[in-house]
Amino acid sequence: MNSNLDVWAIQHYPEELQTALSNILTDSKNNILFHNCVCSMELGGELLSSRQFDTMLYAEDSDTLILLMRDGVATADDIKSYLNEKNILYHDVFFEPLEDEYQNNNSIKELWFAREAYVLRDALDDSKQKGYSMVTYYPSINGFLKLQYITMQEQLFSVDGRNFQGMIDCPDKTVLLIDGDERSLTERQVYSILDQQRMHVIVDPSTNVPCKEKKLVRALR
Image (cartoon, rainbow, N blue to C red; front, side, top):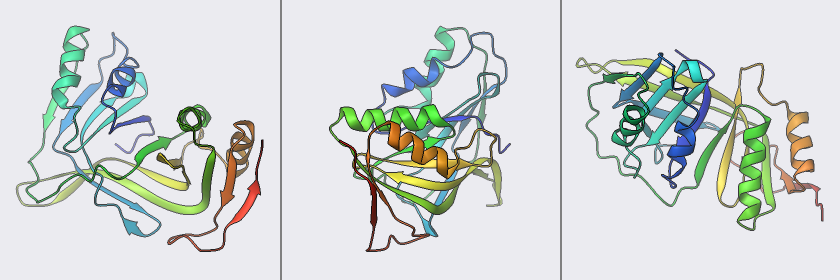
């Protein structure tokens, strides 16, 4: 698919699932609930193996893609209960389950996926409400998210995915900036939003492992 639907990744706060589901149009028909997805994510050349998403609601009519964290509190049954209650049509697709020894690491920060300006603003507002105003912006780091499925012959095939260009590291979350869409944020737009949100910003030019010398470019009061 490799669509660029708006991504809602439900992780530490299962109550956010209701907010995400409220975006699903009640008269929509192209809703597919995928189970047992194989998730791989790379950032700055490093594989992020301790945070995976194995359930995906693909809602094309509603411009919404909902991901559930593997081994998280929010489950596919929660999604189905909501859709059934609202009489929203959907299809269940079950892939071959992946047998491994994965264990979710709850100490990892939340990941936000920002396709456009409002998501980045919401992320920064959320951090500020928690008392955080210092962020580090990595404009040169890129990466990807792949959602696949495994066959009985142990072959992997793609279901959906995203490319990233740039990330913003907050004390409570990491915001990955989605690339490849006409709504994707430019570096100039990111700086403008950080300025408007009155954040203290450190810029790190690293493309992989963060460098030690960082440049403070803005410290607003």
